[in-house]
Amino acid sequence: MKVLIVSAHPGPTSLTNSLRDVAAEQLRADGHEVQISDLYAMKFKACHDADDFTAHDPAEPVRYPFASMAAAADRAFAADIIAEQDKVLWADAVIFAFPLWWFAMPAIMKGWIDRVWTAGIGYQTGGDRYGAGRMVGKRAMLMVMVGGGESYFSDRGVNGPIDDLLFPLNHGMLWYPGFDVLPSCVLHRTDRMEQERYDSIAEEVRERMRTLFTISPIPYRRQAEDYTERKFELKEEIAANAPPGFAAHIDESRK
Image 1 (cartoon, one colour):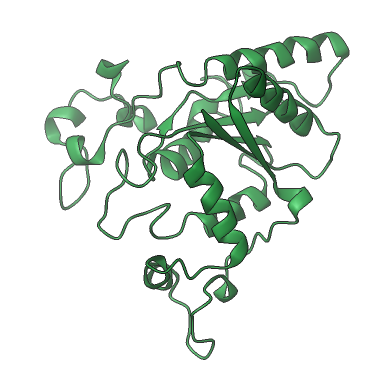
Image 2 (spheres, rainbow, N blue to C red; image 1 turned 180 degrees about the horizontal axis):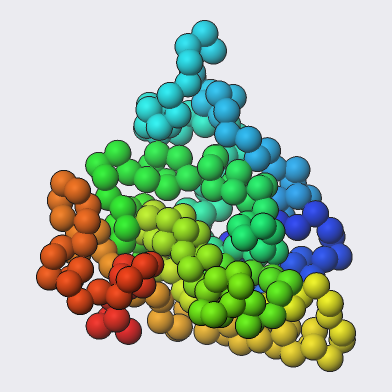
């Protein structure tokens, strides 16, 4: 299979990049093809602006969704956007490796999403999304380095449940385009790392790579099946028995 790893950490010898390389090594050892987009090493442009649309009239204001839709048919986007989209289209699975900074991915990776998820890639002009779209049949997973311990991100933890914090990324950035979203590989207490613990975490990463194409994805609800057509709300019969919060958008019957 083919795997793209998109990573975001400015330090070449950082834990993020070290474990990204562990992941790539294991995937290749298992016979998979791997490409890596190291966003800091590439000096990837994070700001989504008018220069991203090669056919746009600079005298006109940019209405971004409409400019993206107009550019989609001819893929009239900047060369670095096209290059990253081609990697995504090539891949059977995409892994996003990054440290959790201020409860989100680093800005450069969010910029990658902003720029690469254009019309025709991240969203479809016909409205196919949340379980439908261009990425159907592909897998995606977050590999997240978290400084705090697991208790900090538990149901009672001061930072809130980690699954809730990652919901906008998993559900909004990955399920929306149609990926099968795998349970995140969350690595805690990564601000200090002795060798013995690093070896243990590296093995955890290797095991996740061994199961990348066999582990069951998060069973998010499909828009076309479980939501109303006009308001896009959960159907009454589903909402009546759904748990509160983000968990309502997971179909427990499909686990």
